[in-house]
Length: 282
Picture 1: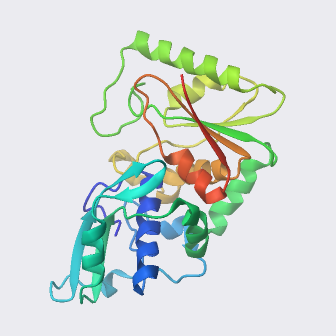
Picture 2 (picture 1 turned 90 degrees about the horizontal axis):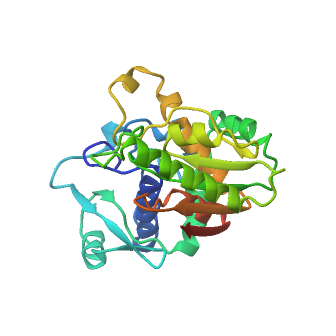
C-alpha cells in the first residue's frame, strides 16, 4: 500500500516495499496486488509484466473483519534487506484475513531482487522512449556516479534536514567536484552524474565529461503544493529515468563525504541491473 497514509520514502524505499511484500506472498501463497497512488499512479512509469498486480480502489476492503493493516520498517545488515519483525510477519501471513495491507519494508534476499523486480514490472512505453532518448549520447559502456545531499545545499525539500551556510555549501561542492574529477580517469567518455541537488548538478555540468538528465527534482513524500498543479508524469519522471539509467551503467558509484546521506538509490538500481557497485567515502 502506497497511498500517502504514512511516509513511504523515495523511489528506492518504495520499490523495497513492493518487492519485499511480493517475496513473502510467494512464500505463503498469497495473491499479490500493488495499490500505489501517492503521489502518482505507478502505471505512469511501470506496468505489470508476468504478475497482474493492479487493483482498483473499489476492490480494497477496509472492513476490520476482512482486512488488517501492517506497518513495518526495515534496516540494513551487510547490504541485505532486513526487518525487525520477521516473527510478527509470519504470524500475520498465517492469519485468516482476506486482505493484508502492508506498509513499509519486508526482508528480500538481495540475490533475488532483480529477478523479482523483472517478474513484477516492465517499463511503460512512454518512460522507455525517454530513457532511450537520454541514453543515446552515453552509449552502453558508461559509468554512473551518485551524490545525495538531502537539504545540505538548501535546494531539496526533505523533512527538516539541516542546511549548510553558503560558505560551507561551496566548500562541500568543491570537495565533491574534486573527487569526481579524480575518479573519472578517461575524461573522453561521458559519465552519468545523478544527485538530489540542482545546485550541485549545475556546478558539475561545467565538466565536459559529465552527463546529466534534465528535469525536476522533488522528493515523493515532500513535493510542494505548487507541483500538484503540474503534469503528474513530468513531476517525478526524472527519478525514474535516473534510476533506470543507473541500473544500465556498467559500474555504479555512490560518493559520500561529511554529512551527506548514505543513499540506497544507486545500490537498489545496481541490484535490479545486476551491476558492479562501489561506495567511496572521502
